[in-house]
Amino acid sequence: MLIQLLEPGMTPPPHAEEKEIAIGIDLGTTHCVVAYSTEHKPTVLSFDNGEKLLPSIVDYTDSVLVGHKEGAGIRSIKRLIGRQTIPVDLQLHYPQAVLSDKSIRLKIGNQELTPVEISAEILKVIKQNAEAALGKSVHKAVITVPAYFDEAARQETKQAANLAGLEVLRLINEPTAAALAYGLDKQVEGVYAIYDLGGGTFDVSILKFTRGVFQVLATGGDTLLGGDDVDYLIQQSLIETNPAHAAFITPSVARKLKELMVDQPQATIEVNDQTLSLTQGMLKELCQPLIHKTLSICKQALTDANITLEALKGVILVGGSTRLFTVRQSVGDFFKTMPLTDINPDEVVALGAALQAEALTHGSETLLLDITPLSLGVETMGRLVEKIIERNTPIPVAIAQDFTTYQDGQTAMQIHVVQGEREFVCDCRSLGEFTLTEIPSMVAGAAKIRVTFQLDADGLLTVSAKEMATGLMQQIEINPAYGLGDAEMIQHLRDNFANGTADIEQRLLVEAKVEANQMMIQLKAAISEDGDLLTMAKREEITAALLLLEKTVVFDDRNAIKEGMQQLENASFSFAEQRINRSISRALSGQKVSNLGE
Image (cartoon, rainbow, N blue to C red; front, side):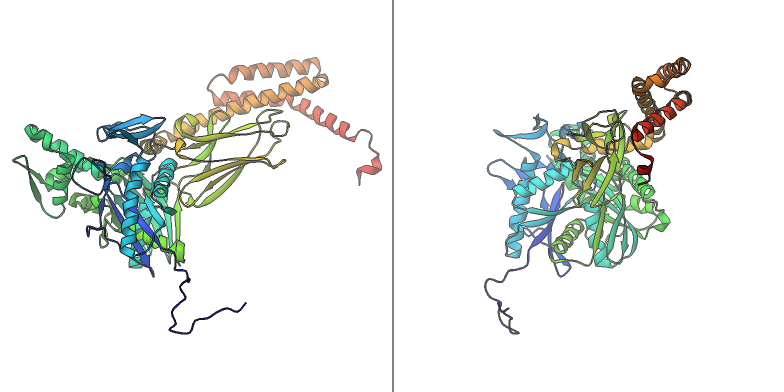
């Protein structure tokens, strides 16, 4: 077949395929932004009202309306994505929320809707407006999520996009997207901190820019801290000083006052014939506890990345809440440098997502290396956690680790997947479990089970277990039913830092007990099989050492347990040698000497 070539200037035939179109979406708690990139130049698209920010509000009063600021619409639905319960801090904000079948639903009229369904309505409008602005159909997107979104929240974000008719090419962490946009636009190199304070979440990432490679070194955050919390504090302060007008002082009123404060020392607003005012001093006093929490998280992220303040080239501000003067001043004081604000903090995340969307559909010379925010592992004997993927590991990643059986003749193994930083299962969060069966019956420790954790670029996890002798394999994909709650995720890290030393000491004690119990089980089995090799005196010596260890292992004295194990090992050493000699004799029985050299 001949290949047809076009002459210069000729029009391509009608059937020539156009390049894929993929958009970048910042699905924010307070506002959403959508952008499109071509030839590495991202542009924020406007919505049908001419605005570039779409309020994340869904109103079901008559028909479904998205983005209307007035009215009793559902706001900040992103805060409920991936949750199984409603934190106390959020219960007042979602009076219509009910728990049904281990999931959250919002009672709206005669229907109950999930956060996924409500988020899908926002994404539908984003898709429609992008198609109108570009004049083409849009079916693919890169969507940004907080760095500290857990497995469930990421899965539900993808589900919402699918309901809206969008294929998610990749979920990208918000501070990483911002860094991508800033780094490519400014051609920077070096280590930067990305301080992202949005409407409902706070994230910080430490990134290294090197000749087109964007590597996340560490990340931290709090998914229950953002501009919504500032609005609530302003509202409560205004109610305290104007109790007679409390019914009219809504979160919307507080938000308007806050937005007026961005570039002026004082703001006033009329509500029910009452003048409400707010000054920079009042706002600073209200915000300081929240800002202090964000800076504590920044300090930990720098420690995790092993980066000093002096080594930072700068700090990039992201998120609408960073427009506040008190936030910028506090961040500048902490990092000892003026924050970089020359890219619109409301738009920079969407711009980065658009660049990544273009890279995934048309190729790119840049390389994005993200990380996982929390460790992932499996439960081992003694209810201990064996971490397989450590937190701050670059993703995508696949790591395998070999395990073995605990008892003789064990033919099944329970694989329990957990997420967290503590040493014991009870202090971490269960993500899922499955059973590997039909393991060949062998002595304890002989079987080889390879457990593989695969974490993709979206931070979604698949776990498999394979028995190496038979090739038998089972696997599980982590889904929303197993998600780690956002508040719990932050608490896991705080607990780990507070209890790390004590956890390690307790782990060493439990490991010693597990080892001692396994030693006693194996020795009792050996005596049952080859006890005829023992003299009466040697049997009594081993029995005495066994009884002593059985009594010692009950107590929490690791040194005493180790000493008891050593005594039992000394008492049974000659017995072990006799058993080896018997095994060799049995193996060689009937063999000719001439055959042994073959």
